[in-house]
Image 1 (cartoon, one colour):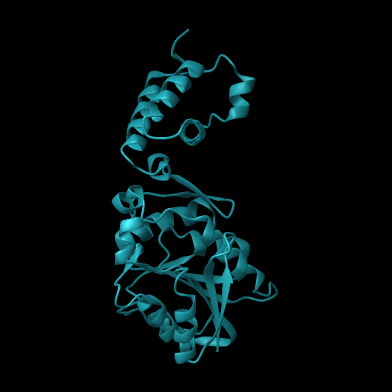
Image 2: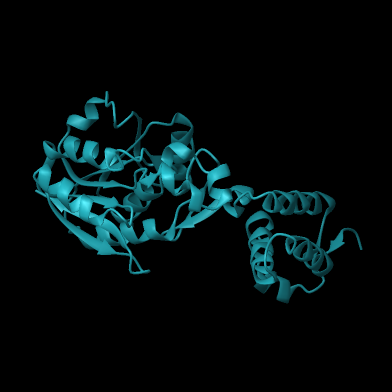
Length: 285
């Protein structure tokens, strides 16, 4: 038979992955590679025990294993990440969507009445995961998503098309805003801005530091609430009655976020994530 026996290939590359990962991690990574690169899931492997892959697939799999061993996150290797039940393309122009940010979308969604149109801002959209998930959940909403990176917005636009939603993507720097769209009334502002202090780099994983965009991660140690302050300042005069601003936050900055909100005329609530860490904030006037 032409091609490579999948069972043997899977065993071979799983053993190679063990040079950098635990056996369990290696098996999980191999499962992801087969599913995301070739749409070969475990069910198909059981149903087709004689399954084989061709030379091109074998080469792609070998290259993927090499990149994983070099520290590239598996989502960048496959170009795929799941968020809120939706499939997203990701590359090194955008952060990999995190489960905590899914929680943010869930909390915001639970707070919104589903009986009227409303306007959402997603500030620092990256892959577009928040904006697209909200547009999918609330088809009647008008969603505007801002980012300073045109490369990130290209990725986000691709994701919006693939997920069949309409989002207005705007290239603008929230710290130095130029777009007139910031002057429109808004009902819901959502942001997962950079919030990791530069000094925290020493405890972070190399695969994050070496591959994910630093501009989407880090803030100066001497002004860790830089983006929150600016977003609240922009929202303050535009937020409609009963509107709210929602943030993902640094778990060490809950008290500081409350004080910042109060100084700008907002009332803040802090919420824990599934790991019982203060991770989200909602703010109303």
